[in-house]
Image (spheres, helix red, strand yellow):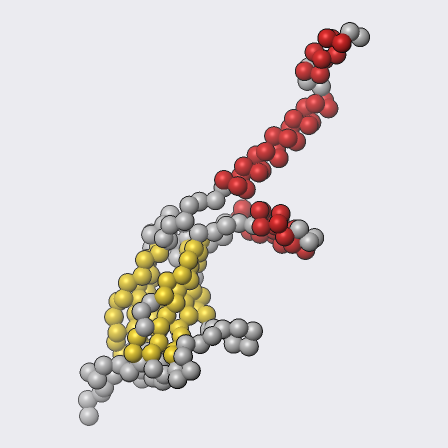
Length: 188
């Protein structure tokens, strides 16, 4: 076979070349999806103070917040109430964990009311909201793949595969633990 004829025969598709081209394109597509498939970070929720009132049973004072999902995707929201005592704000670690209240997924462009009891102890209190996009079926598959890779001692590759979800946290202002004198009093 002449040398020029061999070079031309490599360009003619055969079964072996088709397989390698298809595998290379699939790998390139998967890499592009994993790298560019993440969305830019923007705020997903808005929180508004809705009011301070008595609990319907009259036993304690409650505060209400309105949480609005301003994005086009479902959002997971959770809240933690912290109370400041003489020792300061709680510090979480292996021995002390916050009590987290997780809400149902908030559908796109929907609102919900979150009610929290005003504590009657401590100096001050605050609420921290944490939110993130609710995982899709594709995200759950990517999470399983990342877990598989971590178990195989491949953490760098797992980080590359792991879904990156938009999210954040919002710390509400510090509130005095003692409610105003006009609130929570019953007629005598």
